Image 1 (cartoon, rainbow, N blue to C red):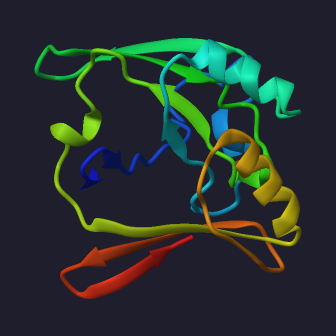
Image 2: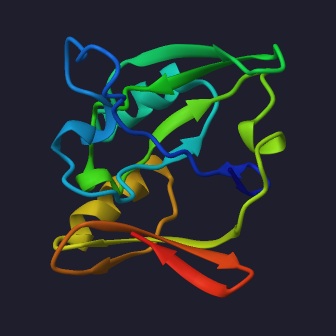
Amino acid sequence: MSIGPGCYLEIIGPDPAQAPPVGPRWFGIDALSAPRLVAWAAAATDLPRLVNDAAERGVRLGAVGEGRRERPDGVVLEWRVTDPTVVLGDGLVPFFIDWGASPHPSSTAVVGPRLVALRGEHPDPGHVRTLLVALGVALPVDAAVRPSLVATLETNAGLVQLR
């Protein structure tokens, strides 16, 4: 669902009707015991250069891959993405996506609540902040007992936080 211009929320989980995958599912889904925010994507272009620049700063984002899918209306979406199986900062460091010439999913998705804030919590916020700064990503990270992404959404019933 669209949660603002250029922002969308995607709910992902295993499909019990499908055969188990050969390797682990993206975002550590196999290890989840309850629903929660596990990852986020940041928009970027020239992903190979981003990956190389990040590596020079000591941050390994993994390989760049490609994806595509066809929407029910026949429009084909194509994107490039840094490896979503590479989890840094317990999921507080984003993976990166380039939608190229494809329309951004938020432009045609069902309109939902509006994202008003995204922040992180982590037992070692300094380490996570160092990774984010190396990537040029602005995400506030506070100290907390457990790592957590926290999205604040403005709904018809007021502000709601998803963790």
